[in-house]
Amino acid sequence: MSSGHPLIDRFARRMSYLRLSVTDRCDLRCTYCMPERQQFLPRKDVLSLEELHRLALGFIARGVTKLRLTGGEPLVRRDMIELVRALGRELGRGLDELTLTTNATRLAEFAEPLRDAGVRRINVSLDTLDRGTFTRLARRDSLPQVLEGIEAALAAGLSVKLNTVALKGINQEEIPDLIGWAHGKRMDLTLIEVMPLGEIDADRFDHYLPLTDLRARLEQRLTLTPSAHRTGGPARYADVAETGGRLGFITPLTGNFCEGCNRVRVTATGQLFPCLGGIEQVDLRAALRSDDPESALDAALDLALRIKPERHHFAIERPGSAPTLDRHMSATGG
Ligand code: SAM
Ligand code: SF4
Image (cartoon, rainbow, N blue to C red; front, side, top):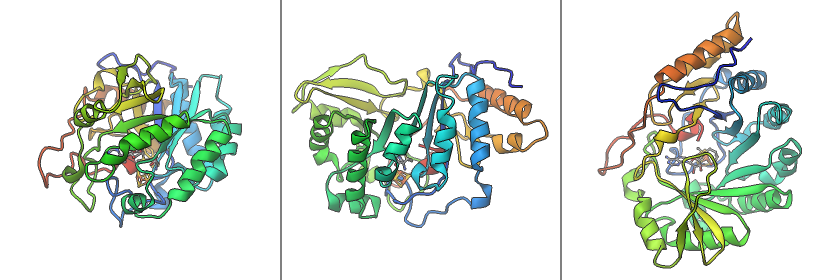
């Protein structure tokens, strides 16, 4: 039996949100995320569907109410929808929200099954509406499928929030149009600063765009009024008078938000990372495969709470500087 104790860390922060990676694999190769020749985890190390399910139930028993499935690209895992269906049955029984983050390449096929399984809101990552820019950035010519996926999600009645990594010299000039397009379709859009996670083929410094600078530039064209809207995450929102929509800002580098952290991440191999930007980790797969998995999982979660750091120390200060961590976002579960 789970202890049922709430997950509260040394800094009195309560963990109510789990981001669970179901695969580190992906059908795109976004240049800021991973190198073209990314080394993926051996399949034999990845948790089975049944293990992912038991893991999620262990977190729900400890008070996690929001679960986001992510990756890598969650929809490239073949049995993924079975997991969504199984977890959908926990909605209203401890779980308040089941959601996912996707690049949308396979959303046209999965939008309705996701909705039928109980998903109501999803995050879609979209950095550009220009096909050439998309192909250079994601190293795959998949913009048409992505747009089709977004339309399918909207048609299925899912609420879609777009996430856009702001990149100097790549999509910076296009961002006002992207905001207008998203708001015209009643989708919120959140801008994100690129984070120094894992080696890539380029230097992140070259394209790092502080959102303090971008916001100042946007304010020359748009009227942004700070909003009290929160989605339980690090984004801070503004209402845009010209479009009637909402614009979010996630600023890991220019505005630390760790004080209010409510989340932990688990990789597809069952490694729990209490902090996206920390080296601390706890092996949940060993706990799941032990003789007394429930008690072992509980003990592992208690350990994670004891070692969760106060804050991350991301920095992109100089050309050529090494990533803060050698782990990619796609492996940790973005
Ligand atoms: N493949 C899915 C997708 O792209 O939505 C889910 C996983 S992806 C790792 C989750 C998010 O992380 C995406 O919005 C992506 O843009 C973002 N991301 C990846 N690497 C990043 C980095 N180094 N800095 C900031 N955001 C990053
Ligand atoms: Fe894949 Fe998402 Fe990383 Fe792009 S950001 S390579 S879609 S995991």
